[in-house]
Length: 326
Image (cartoon, rainbow, N blue to C red; front, side, top):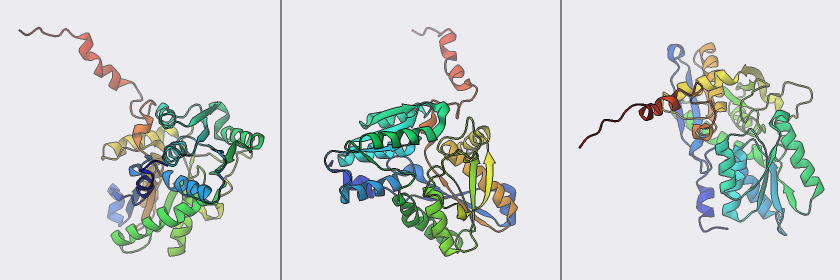
């Protein structure tokens, strides 16, 4: 364990709640809030469940005898595992689809974690199957953390993310939220936060954002086919409504948020897009969502520069003669 491990763990959570403008919906009295999770040490909401999973595994001896922590991830949880594993002295192996953004893969590797890349055409579920196979083949070498089936995942969000949202929205608006918008990656955020907010407001409406099958939205499972793996920890009974969002719609929402000063990833853009639609539909509603990670994690994708125009403009000076000054 590194000397700063405790401080790093204590730096997780306690993130700010920001209020987003709603244009015409504001005249109906609706308000939209979002939890800014990019300020966690690992840059995403995944620090919360990963820290809890690691603490429990260390306390119950699951990682004794030199076993490696093994899990599958679309990228953000992988970064949290790699960073916290490095701080706590836990060796980490991660199975990640090869189409995860370059920044995510580089960050994971920088912390010293072992990467096993899977065929992106096979999707996230193939990475899960691969991790399960590795764990079954070498139980002496790997402890399978299984963020899709580990109850410490949703409990972290129930106790921290959900509890913080409830306290912050109540302080800002005088009551608990009416609508919670999230997506399903592992199901931890939707389940944990949804349960905590529904305890406070039995009339809470939980809305799940569903990405298109391809190219999809990083970090979100479509769950539209019979063969899709449904995370064990997902409490589907919480969901009253599912809203489909395309990759292009999510990207456009991210670029709009950036012009408002919030630099976030595509899942966050999708959540805000749906949350704004719902706020317009329900006058006076308090709507809350999460901004899961930072937009810097997608610099190598087309998220911020879909036409390549920024690079072209930045090279203009090379093509023009430079005046000589003596």
